[in-house]
Length: 309
Image: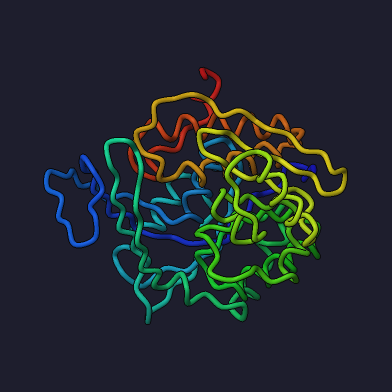
């Protein structure tokens, strides 16, 4: 999967996160007082782009924001991170994406997203940014943008020799198209997402192996199931080999962007030509740092912090 250290191109969502941290998460109909409010940049695509950029990669992003203050702030923030924002389109009709996040004292969270311009991105608009995709060593995507866009980019990326990584989050409401999975080199679901894709509940390593095997039969070469505190289950469909990567033990403050951090960090290490096992260790260490901090992008570590962990 060596990509000769080309660009990492992230195709995905950009949101503004409105976060309230309280002692507990409210039940339906309940109001919880005493929360602390934070406003940060977010969106799975933007989070993963920032994670990769802070860890030393050359990152370019393709996305869509509204023609509003939230969109302007988001693009300016990404540019300050050193990310090439030339592929970010502006929509005058739809507002920028917003995420409402509730976090409790244990670091667990609930998230509701108003996608806005993220869902207005179309395959027809991607002709103008094809050069960005051609420049990619790795193309990293998630499911907060329209499925036709994801399929189009995956197909184009493979035509130009890029490694395609898909983080199927948030959990898909329907089966992923076989045509898409045929163009995905690495799929990174969590337990819930792996169950929805494979039809097999993932509760432990044995069931993770069964789910990964089914996903591998759908055409994906490498399946990486993230299992929170239980670590990561990795399956290679070509060799049939599997491996368990033990999670780093830390006290979690906020798990909001842990998965995004993992995906961005893994992309960086693979783009540098590191073997998969080294890339997974690097991604695990980055994610372990992120859960000790509040917020999405504010939690993402820089490269110099990795050497001290």
